Image 1 (cartoon, helix red, strand yellow):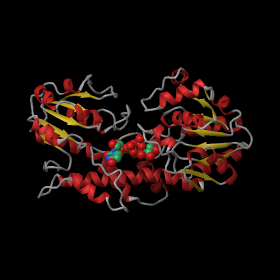
Image 2 (image 1 turned 60 degrees about the vertical axis):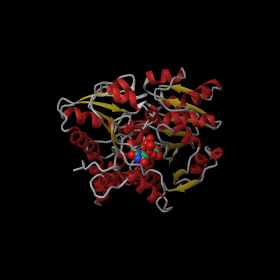
Image 3 (image 1 turned 90 degrees about the vertical axis):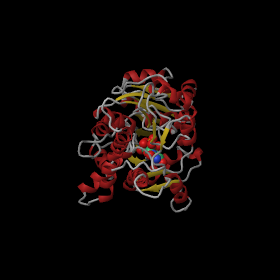
Length: 429
Ligand code: UGA
């Protein structure tokens, strides 16, 4: 089938190469001409395992092409996937101006009977509003909600192995047409109304955020109580209950990335506007905002103050496997440390950040450092020679906010290991 994707960001470009790999042809509308030129030459603008290879294949067999003109992009497409940013507004609600601009732009340029598929994460009720607008514009197309569940760092893998395909459509025929695009993936299809599909998306992110925030709070508590608790033992025991499950239970320095915090805030804003006080989500937001501050306080406590101290930071991206630093707890921790008088040298295998002084290897990051804070769970940190770390550092503290390192190896090198929620630190006030 011929399709179009509007917006070649994290989601759009993976959707486009994925559709191409499934045998469809795709025209991608991308207004950022620099990004478009790079993609056209096979050079993805983001670090995403497998993306470059899939893009190369699609370009080679001519199943993908790019244009800066969205109206041109949608011509001849039976399904048009809109994957433009819907960032957070100051009041927490989703900012939809970009999405609406695209809808206005493409509605009448689309082929009769085609589907305008909303991939962007949007508040409940957006597809219904789009349907109304399409009628007003007398655009001969229907709207379908088809949210994405792609994790950065494994987005290509997630595209090809989805747990479910959610398709929200009032027009069943149109819904089936969209679901059929993914037929070869053999994934279960959940047919719903557009509003239910929209809620499934934000509720998934909000639920996972709540779950991790709960575990983070447990880890913070474990650092406070006597006798000793190891949070990793606790989550292993919790996760063996099939009603709970063992994924998304790793404590850490707080939620990062473009989606989790934004979607929790957006759902809370939807509730607020509807007159419902979703107190649970408010607690998730405030608890999560505080998590990197607790890390900074822990470092301050463990180093006996931060003024004039030098801290090495391992990790800049919001999680391993990506160069994305949006809402990265690592960046928030660095800012907090600096605010309290420390200097920070950071190392990350792929990410950099304009506010951070970053170096090209993990040992240089800890050179003459009073303490090391591991903020991102890159597996390569496990392979760094801790003896070299100990030799480079002036101080002894290693604070592992992801519980990634082997405590025995760290201690064996003469360093002082602190995990998160393990081996009580008594630092979480
Ligand atoms: C998330 C969702 O997992 C995807 O399903 C969704 O499609 C995507 O948002 C989106 O809405 O576009 P992503 O933002 O890539 O994907 O990140 P995750 O891997 O889910 O991690 C989110 C945050 O939770 C990270 O800061 C991560 O470090 C943290 N996390 C995750 C933990 O602290 N502990 C865990 O056990 C798991």
